[in-house]
Length: 299
Image 1: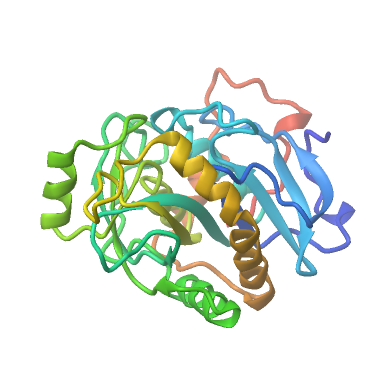
Image 2: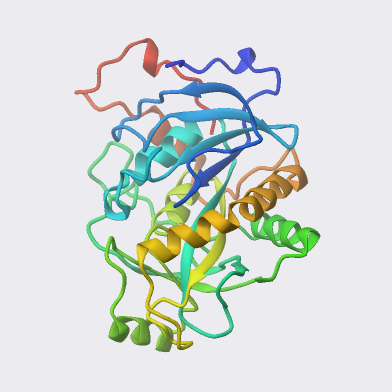
């Protein structure tokens, strides 16, 4: 295990793409592991070690958002540390996988979706690098389109290539968790325009955008949430069992996305580059500087 990152030690080069594994995806079977990194950040520790691997012949970074054994609850994930760590390694685009519930019949169980909008119904999560409490200053992110259109297009093409059933759009409502929604809450969210429900799709997209990284999500619909289609209400056992059954399909899509993504992909430049660099160069006084923090920063 390495605590420093040496780009030139990797024959495939620095990873331009990262995969954030959701529930049930704690490693990447079939990928060739090159290194495993402990990446310290000014915002605390990420969810776990970051794996550098070859997938579809390309260098990628992989991080499991819930930790290696699903030990981190959705509202406790250190989202800022996770995205900062990936950007510090040179990542330009992030593909996340998520288990989601369906709120409407158009987004059925055992299918995929590629969300294009979100509704934030979380609270208490550190969801910006620019709130004025850090020397990075106050910045205001344009967030009308929270997901990167170019990366979404690649995910859609991968799903088409594999013949998977999917919806090429969707509004995902993000609740705090770890409990599932009540029936009344689900009805309100559906009436408000949400198609899907998740516990983790906020603030990942906006934090990525604040660092000028593109972000897209591959959602796998595990359930009908509180049973709008007449099925039983969701339980953790249902979600995990269906994720396990679908894991090979999810991995195949992620592999196809990696294969299709252009090697010169650059994330949308929504934030001032100088502001992004200030975030990447920020060091809190309490943080001990040493070899583990001498990483190559790219912005």
